[in-house]
Length: 134
Image (cartoon, rainbow, N blue to C red):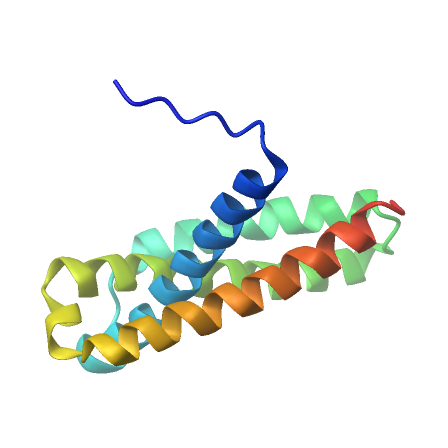
């Protein structure tokens, strides 16, 4: 059995950046899937994801001190974003499962992975800088 210890800071960062990169690629492929075939999930499931995100977002903004109507607006906006990301990731997984990656040249896949890794590292760096002051 192979066991990988993520006690090393460099390995933790690399694993986090790779996870973020593959999620970004899944979102991009999911958007392609959305335009090619339509919605990847049934409408009731999409509405359920929106409802759960709306509740969580509204409570989050209310706890952070937003006034009553604005916490609902913030929850709705956050829920739309969460719903879009979930639909895109599911669409990206379906795109990969249906052999959609075979239609793309390997150069494009490697360029997109490299670009997503760079963007993920920049995002992680800014997020960790901002989170140390919270």
